[in-house]
Image (cartoon, rainbow, N blue to C red; front, side):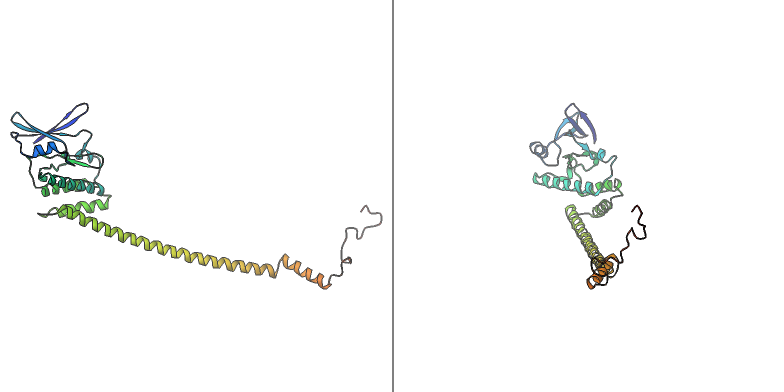
Length: 265
């Protein structure tokens, strides 16, 4: 099996050549007459005693190129698995064999958060085995700063070593575990926030008590001494006649005291 690309002004095709005479069964008519979600448009014919299958890939990018200079994270793996599972369900609806999917990065294409697969009728493999090889690809391309992605990739790789694994069940269990961890983390965050709020309230009450005590002490100081107290004492003396009556100015010192009659003042 070999591949080649044909590029025109408004169309790009992928040709896969098989060194076998071209023969058709129900699969190619089913593929031609139905638009199956996740499956690339395909046509097949014989040429020089070989078989050629042509796929339309205009506006798409291969997975191989997509992750050539990019690392694989948790979201990338989840996105891929979700598209694969949906595509497999669609193939079952049309009585097509999921084992005919080419699960190799060079034959998987991507556009707008969706993966598209090549369906090759004459290539029948075990889908479980093919996907296990994909998990090896994920492990090699991992973003090692993404802890969740590392966990998912290695869990998938380990689980797919089993002979008859259920990929959908594996993903469901992973999602449940992730949800439980998130709920636990959120609960811890909520408890921390509650403790911080209680501490803030405690500090606020202490500050209010301190401020109240300070104001009370300040008021007592003002009443027991200072200018205001002096004026109160003077007023009390006046009211009791200790300073004399109004109009008696014997104690008043004037600027003219001690000045002669010929003073300029």
